[in-house]
Image 1 (cartoon, rainbow, N blue to C red):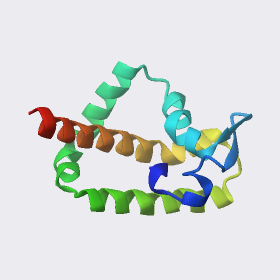
Image 2: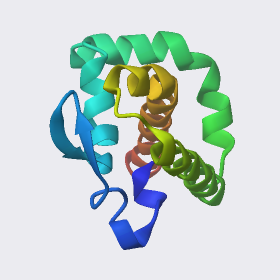
Image 3: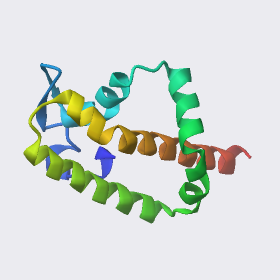
Image 4: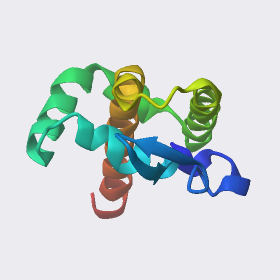
Length: 121
């Protein structure tokens, strides 16, 4: 979701945080930190997302690119608001945002499948 965020901080790349005591940036937290903290292998995570979010497919498929982008932008704004008050506890961050991160991953996969099906289907 950080790709639709603030241009001035390069989508969170310039926002420095401590992640389990190590220096990282906010973009990394969303690309890797939350995902790896869940502890699944790639195949386990894909299966978990499919089982947990299968009811979202139709909603995601019906969203226009503008709606997805706007949804992600507003979501990123909530991430930045949280960031302003975050105490640095990475466990709490994962607890707070894991479901949102998982929806973002699942939606991206569905949208990518739609594009590939349109090209090659």
